[in-house]
Length: 156
Image 1: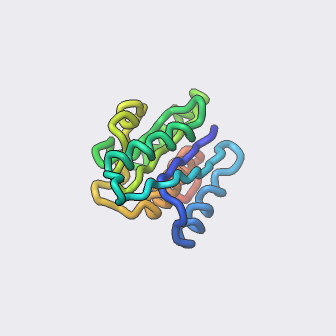
Image 2: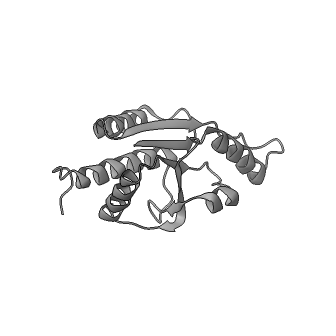
Image 3: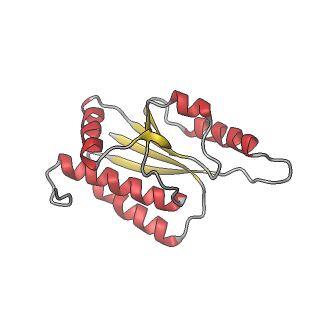
């Protein structure tokens, strides 16, 4: 199984890259976990939020893997526990599905991308820095993987 994280934003602080990479390498052989950074659209100079979202949308769609389940992080998405995420991960793995998770830019994601998504997922009801979302998502996916493998990382 391959999980691709498409995240609008580049040049994250070192701690973000280090923490993300630490979780990404923990999956082992059964899951390949890859980050693809999407260049954010510069705002100002006549570039409105809507124009910026449209430009980022085009970059995201161009970067999406050919065949995958699309999971978009959105504040109005499903609010799952780690165990529920593990259950969904198990289903995806059993179906042989590759997954693409998308984290939007500062102004969010296009309605078109949200409508296209197989799943809208809420990581938190709070607004979080995008770098932190990368790390939190990587950690939760690793936690879900550890739950499925009865690894002691997760405790109930």
